[in-house]
Length: 496
Image 1: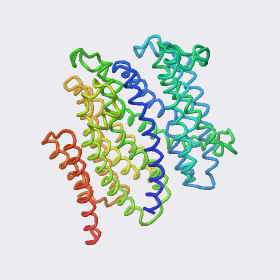
Image 2: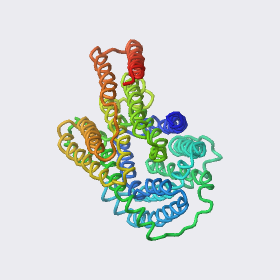
Image 3: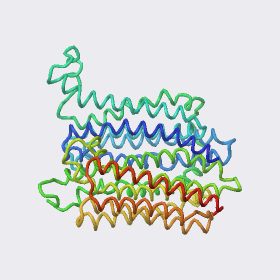
Image 4: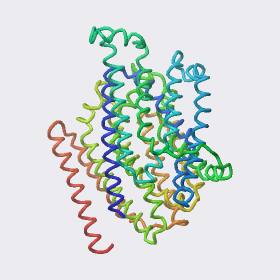
């Protein structure tokens, strides 16, 4: 079973890593074109997209997994009901955003950007509609179809970003490819460069549709109200958790602009500080890649193996190896942040926030630990506990940002983030042992984390530079892996 999970995680992981890596090639493009204050606008609007994506799907993806695996004879019924509900609700929600786009832009403080709000409405609708077909593909273990759709979309996103942000200005003002000039002049407006980031996103997402044709075959747009209500009852707590979870993830990017005192960073506007924070936040991509890849593979894995008598032992092993690998990623990114930032962040003005990266990485590890732990309330149909825990985390996030941002700027945001996810993980573990006891190897897990953090802090005291930092730092990564694997081998031999 672990080998199957590992192989699927590898495929999802390779897809996600390649795809996100390609997608993160946009970061150096954006940070080279947009000054930090304009990149701050992109950062804030994408934070709102993250929150709205959760609202648009309102827990139906997880509800579909649960109902389709709970009674395989009803899997098509679950699929049809979930997809129909999402389709019509997305039309309603996006229609409202589109209609009031001007007022929404004014409310956000970005008057004159109603066109961007309209593009965002279309992105949200399309993302929501394809969520259920993608869930079906994952449940059927069609990992290569999933991979093809995701990577194709990302390649197109890169292409359209380069076309709109790099080639169109050269064609329009520098005389490149003069035969394309009439075509470019028919739509291109240089003063709307930020809008093209969202246009590219929408156009690339359309590439999902050909890959999802098999998932749409046989679909009947129909709603069994009683059955759909049961799915909603299961999924709505997931919605509340999702909203609270996105608050944990993006609240700082939404509120930093308003909570940061004027001239906190001398000579910088709040939009500039947000742009710096958003760019450095992207440095945690390597951890989020690993966690997302694991999530894609593990969610159906957990549900499919829930009835196995050895499931608790299996889930405990998954947690142990998850932390072992994530701490290796933490060390690698932390000790290589210097040259990685040279690749991802083009302008020097963005790099002053790099010290937030190690804390962000540890916070993400706790987020992944919480995701592992959350299986107890999903399998016992006690999703309301997930709601309570996530709301508890959101309260910590809101309070932490409210009190810490005025004191420490965006450094306060990342510490609030760490406090949130670590508290959620501890609380979920304590409560979960009462309803679905799993004998997690807590001492071993904490040992892996302690060793990784200690090695990083030890290296950080020397303030090494250049090649010396690169060699010694990556030597620490190798040392961690040797120590962690040796500990695991010893514990296996001792049957501990």
